Image (tube, rainbow, N blue to C red; front, top):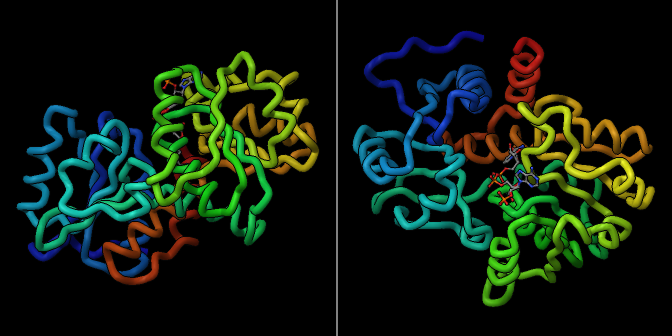
Length: 292
Ligand code: NAP
């Protein structure tokens, strides 16, 4: 698979974040663009928070057709948009932008990405309890997903009581994707673990430089029912210690790679107006992660 030569007509796509050098999105998207034979290139842009507004205006001026948005801009970008999808509004965070006549429009495809491997297992998650570790941006996408999947209840375990209170407020009516949401500190979360159908790690605990750590103790993981599924949003290392421990207990385990592929596929489909080659994107990431 060879890329087209870059010419005066080559279109620009990219990802904005800070830092951004670690992003795997260019690997995945450029392979997909080459496979589709599209004359475009996808580049990582390090944009410091103070430069977000001027950078978005500049990238629009040079005709950038679409952008991925990652930490720390997913919430800060919202006031700068001309349009935001209902899904992104419900999450309170945006990870995908495209240009309109009125300016940048945004949505949240982390929700689609997170749900994809779960919907491949079951079409309905009615009656389920999802327990989420962490209360940051990715946790917000999982809460919205829980509602769209049909889960009855979400329990968020976090260490920042102000963030937990904000989640309870934000996922109550009038949010159209409101859901019954319980919150807990880490010290008193054991009773929720024994009720979990799905346990999601939405913290960075388990990825380098904390690859040797687990977000919960082995004793706590033993509280999970045998039916529980362990889902780690982290995609490197594979498996994380959390997923290895869950698998050792005989639980089904899902890592974050498919979420990364599927959130990117939904974005690329929108930017290029044609189906994204998910097999190519997954293979590109697999190969890159094996080599690095
Ligand atoms: P974030 O907004 O920074 O949130 C991280 C959350 O983890 C916060 O609630 C934070 O608590 C908590 N946390 C951090 N260190 C902790 C520790 N030592 N103990 C307990 N809690 C801790 O980050 P994010 O965007 O939500 O991302 C979270 C994870 O999901 C990252 O590993 C990221 O790589 C992964 N992710 C994967 C995908 C994918 O496509 N697979 C997509 C998005 C994110 P405080 O609020 O108290 O700091």
